[in-house]
Amino acid sequence: MPKLKREESSPRATDFVESLDRGLRLLKVFGESTAPMSLSEIARAADLPRATARRILFTLQHGGYVSGDGKLFALTPQVLTLAASYLRSSQVVSVLQPVLDQVASEAQEISSLAVLDGDDVVFIARGSPARVFSAGIDIGYRLPAFCTSVGRAMLGKYDDPELAKRLTAMRREALTPQTVTDAKRLVATIAADRSQGYSLVDREAEPHFRSISVPVRRYDDAIVAAINMGAHVDRVSKEQMIKRFLPLLARGAEQVKSQLL
Image (cartoon, rainbow, N blue to C red; front, top):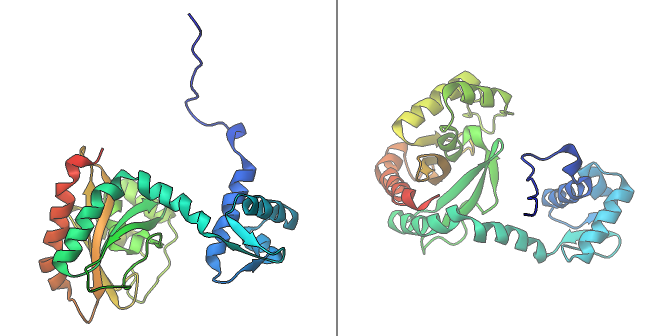
């Protein structure tokens, strides 16, 4: 009988591919500028030697991910295939997209789906009513988890000791005058949100915006995402959010629970 090859249980230091890590880091710096960047600007932003950045850029250019004339470089639409691969392969997106569309249609407001990524939340899908064309948060947009309703809804998956540990380690900078940054106060707020089943954040992430979110749970009750709706403070009150939006979000999250593995 042939001897079976033993699978590695965890990665080793020698498994780390530094060149790939540098290439991904370099790709990210393009998001910091709306104009083509020079080699020197890219190397400085990625904290890489100029020669290293040059080799990586030409490799990415060969693969079709970067365009350049030798002096200025920019991303190409080919980069979108990487994001599209994630969205197509994400069960959360495929299951929740119909829910987002339904909720948005019933409320006549934009609905969004977000997941945790480290200390941030990343918005990965949205639903829009027919009358709304461009408002709302774009897919791929990131915000700190501690001061957003989707972030607090998902952070509720941790028990209080683990939550306190994570919040203490997080970078908690105030984004508005209303942003709560005190770790102990945040633990109490998130614990209360966990008990009531939703989170409502009022002008903490953006100065004139409030939002309400509910956690999305999979079949075993584990929180895997959060869905939300938000509006300008002059247009929708906190009471209206709870009365109008919360039932729709809660119903949508509950109806997909058995479909998420």
